[in-house]
Amino acid sequence: MTDILIISDGYPSKGLPYSAFIATLAEEMTRQGMRVHVIAPQSLTKHWLRGVPLAPRHFTQEVDGRTIEVYRPYSITAGDGRLGFITRGFNRLVATCTAKRLQRPDIVYAHFWLNAAMAIPYIKATKLPLVVVTGEDIIPAGQISSSDKEWLKAIVKAVICVSTKNRNESVSIGLADEKRCSVIPNAYSPNVFYKEDATSIRRKLGLKNDDFVVAFCGRFNERKGVFRLDAALKQLNNPQIKAIYIGSPMDNNTVVPDYTGIAFMGPLPHNEIVHYLNAADVFVLPSIAEGCPNSVIEAMACGLPVISSDLPFNEDILNSNSSILIEPKNIDAIADAIQLLFLDTTMRQQLAKESLSKAESLRIENRTKKILSIMQT
Image (tube, rainbow, N blue to C red; front, top):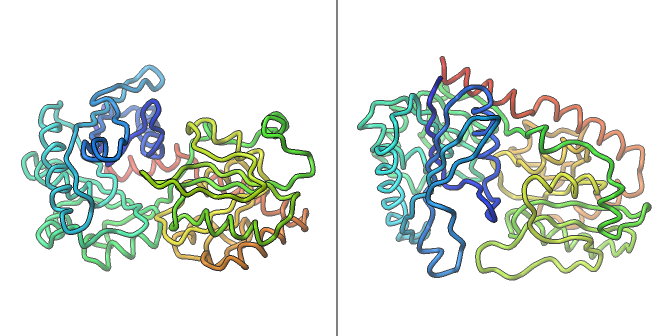
């Protein structure tokens, strides 16, 4: 049995559902016979100053009779600006100290480049193979020192890129050798996301049979584009068009969408999102930066046509057969795309059919097999 240590900056726990995509991969690795440990430092500073809840420092997750061990050591952080070296220094220290107390793994899997840099002292000491997944919206190259870049380029055995965009960016900023890169898009768990009858959830949300429902899932911030979507819906001003906004503001921000036709707004446990997506007629994500958007893939698994950004991060998962691609900062373009699908039932059904078809190739078991094959090689 291969022992894999995942180094991450988050992991979901009870009441804290964020970073569910990391857990999805860890769970599938476990199902496929791996022994998985996770180290994900969490910020005491955010807890003290902003009231951000803390997860248990250690907990286990049961998956089909096997156990994932999750460690969330406390760290001191100071943002990512001029004092960012404090954040990176403490995260590196607590991650290294935690890893040294664990049973020695066979391989280290770093989720994103900053976490790969966090693992450098441990890799230097143990000589273990290091695999990195790059899925950042924008790789924070300025937060990785020149010496760390050189070390990473030399010691990383393989780079899993969630999009061609991420591969090209990793190579261009000197973090990776293209020969070691493999493009494997993000994926969804068919046990969690699937197409289902929406009658009961639409009734629960007070939606009528002829309501046209637009769904969004993500943080309520400028990057994800929820406020541009909200502005587009206000511009259409159609009482038959309703909105489902799954998510919440970042940290202490309090601004939320205020379209009059909101049927639901707020965060949801990861395993409940599927019901709300199935209540929708279309999924919209006008994001300006992604690695490879999990929310789009999960919406496709629920059979939704997609309206999203005509940007490189979508090129590996979306095309004109399953989506309408728009300029994400253009509110008129967002509104026009929604109006088109509202009026054209045939087009909506065809895009939905193609979404389901494409989703079949984006199942988590397939992605995990590819990643484990690269690790074994």
